[in-house]
Image 1: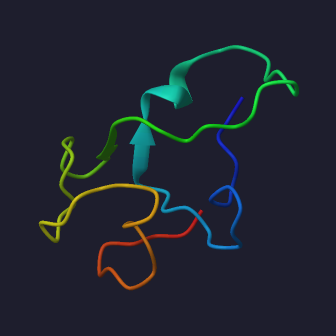
Image 2: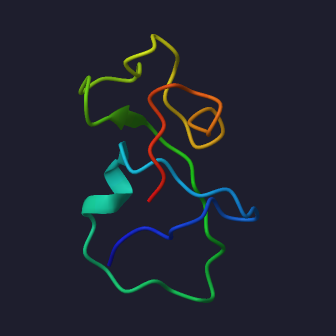
Length: 72
């Protein structure tokens, strides 16, 4: 199941280049467990925790203000 299109609790679209380990877990979501977006993120272009602009990749940081941002 793909990750949600929007950052949980906001209307900000996710950057399509942002990846996390949770994207690769094939399990049905459990509605009784709160959604927790925590963990390590990386950029598809750089394949590490820094984006092409040299800034850290996180849900909060990868927003439209960055030159490398691409919405889903």
